[in-house]
Amino acid sequence: MDWFEDWKETYLTEVSQIFGARVVCAGVQGSRARGEAQATSDIDTVLILDALSPTDLDDYRALIRRLPQASLACGFVSGREELLHWDEGELVGFYFDTLCLMGSLDFLRPLLTREAALRSAHQAACGWYHALCHAAVFEEEPLDARAFAKGLFFLLRARGYAETGVFKVRLCDLLPQIGETERALLSPLTANETTNTELDRSAALALLSGWIRQDASVAPILTA
Image (tube, rainbow, N blue to C red; front, side, top):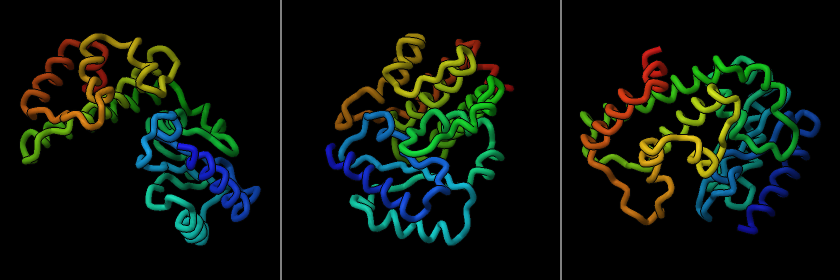
């Protein structure tokens, strides 16, 4: 993974040359930020400028395309003011998931309240529940247990932040703080990527429904 260290240096050099002092934050998210990436994992970039124009988007597109491993690049780009008006529930995960390599996102900290964390958990729970119900009725392929578990991971991180004020970015840090049932539901994320993690849709939905009914801290999130 040594190439990624070189990639970050090149990325920051290019960003500095093109945008200069206008850069509020440049960084990465996802598995690259957590140090859990595989060689072919996406490079989830983050670029926040003082303000964003269509020309900036054109310049950033050209910058990304001339970087090494450009096919792996994706991510988020915004102006500072726009981000301050973002949905506060979404900002919780965004803030803690971002590894700033240049600049800072600390201007968002006042927005990361307990109410914002509960909103984040509520949004994640609703999306997770809908996706599973949709899959059970409308999709032909077996449910991807890894994707199922990833949605739960996002929900539990937000819920944990609302309860404790501490955001667990990595799965290994979250696992000791949750119950046995929750750890079992997250187990596909700890399995080897070559392991067959497909689940029967009906079985997965039954597992989810039972877990929601038994967990008093999640039921209110779904019904809030």
